[in-house]
Image 1 (cartoon, helix red, strand yellow):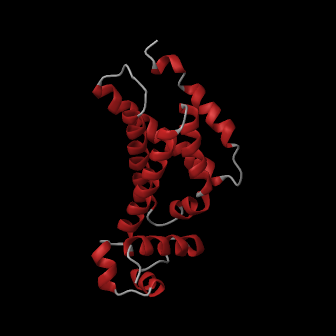
Image 2 (cartoon, rainbow, N blue to C red):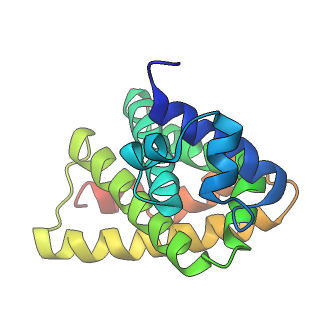
Amino acid sequence: MPTDMKKLIAETFLEMAKQSGIDKITVKALIAECGISRQTFYYHFQDMMDVIEWLIQRAVDRMVARSLEAGTRRDALNILISSTMEERVLIRKMLNSQKREVIEKLFVSATRAYLQEVLRNGKDDSPLNYSDMEVALDFCSFGLCGILFQYCIEEKTDVDDLVGKLCRLIPEGVRDGA
C-alpha cells in the first residue's frame, strides 16, 4: 500500500470528480476505486467534503509557495489565475454540484488564506491597520472568487489580460501608502 494514503484517496477523488462530477462520488465508490477499506478512508477523512477541503488547502499551499517566489505582484496574481484556469473544468463541476454553497465558502476561505499569506510573507508594506486589512481581505476574496468563477465558465481566458485588469484596479501607489 502507498505510504501517503491521504494523497491517494484525494487524487483518486479528483480523477473521479473530473469524470463524473462530485455529486455522484460516494465513499463506497471511492474506496472501491482506491482499493481500500471504509475504515482506512475514515481514518484519513471525516467525509467527502473533508476530502475537497484538504485538496483545496493543498492547492492554496502550492500557490502561496509559488507566489512568494514570484518577482512581482502581477506575477503572483498570474500564478493564482493560471492555476485556477487550469482547473476550470473541475471547478465548474464543483460549482454545478448540490454542494455549491459549501464549495463557494471553501473557495472564498481558501482565497482569503492565499491573499493573507502572500501579504504576510511578501514585501508588501500595507498602510492599513488590522481592522481595515480584515475588511480588505474579505472584499478582495469575495470579489476575486466571483471573477474567477465567472471566468471558469468561459472556455478560454486571456490570463495576461485579466491579470492586467485586476492589477490596474489597485494601483501600486495605494499599496505603498502614497
